[in-house]
Each structure stands twice: as structure tokens, then as C-alpha cells.
Length: 54
Image 1 (cartoon, rainbow, N blue to C red):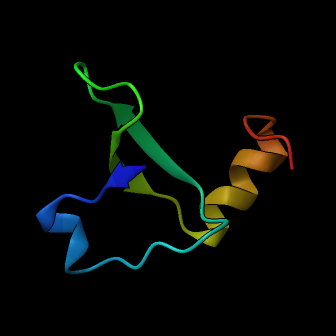
Image 2 (cartoon, rainbow, N blue to C red):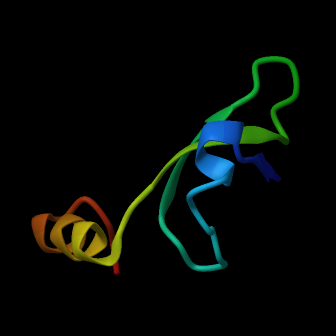
């Protein structure tokens, strides 16, 4: 389960299957903050470079 911070919440839609960076909470490992969402061209680049298995 992830929380989207206020600055990101107003500009970004996050859907199932999107590639995001999350940071787990220190006091509750089951929850995290979403800090970045990759765009489709960025995901393609990460896959080509071998950072993601796709």
C-alpha cells in the first residue's frame, strides 16, 4: 500500500502496471510513499539498458 504525497497527487495519475519508485516507511514496512512515476519513454529506456526485466 502506497501513499501519494500532496505535490504529486494533484498532477499525476497512478494506475496498476505503472513503474514507480517507493520508499518504505521506517515504522510500518507494509506501507510506503510513492516518490516518482516513470513515463512510458523512460520505462522503455530502463528496459533497453537492463535496469528492468520486461
